Image 1 (tube, rainbow, N blue to C red):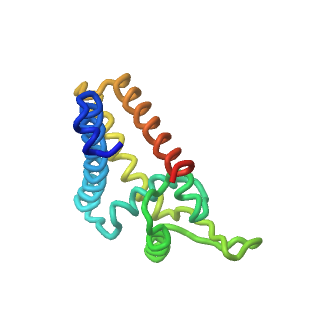
Image 2 (spheres, one colour):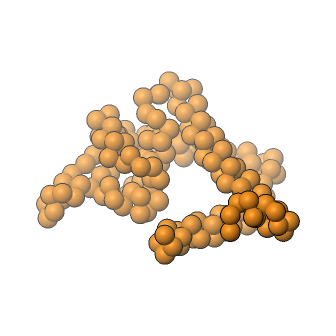
Length: 165
């Protein structure tokens, strides 16, 4: 069904408009998240990393992974993994090591400097969660419902990529 046809049908129109609103909200939330991370590092006088790189360090945490695993495990969603890994190694936030078995494969892990960035991001997120909870802005059961709905959308999109071209 085309967008035009869906907009003509009242029931479909309502669902479509709500879905489009959700898509826009997810995009805005991601951009705001990156802005919050950027502001935190600027406030601390540590603006050498991009917010995307700081988030990548947070998501990797104590794990040792290959570049390919960064996407498959959900640690990084962008398209320029190699560039960001290279920069994080250059700045001393990540350590990389070629596999002794497959020289094409590189495993990466956080250095002490990378772990320090992870702590800053973790503290930021903990403060946000505490503030949301203290103000009663979003109750836990509502967050659970939201996460469940977002996981179902994620699963639907993943199925579209894998099975429908």
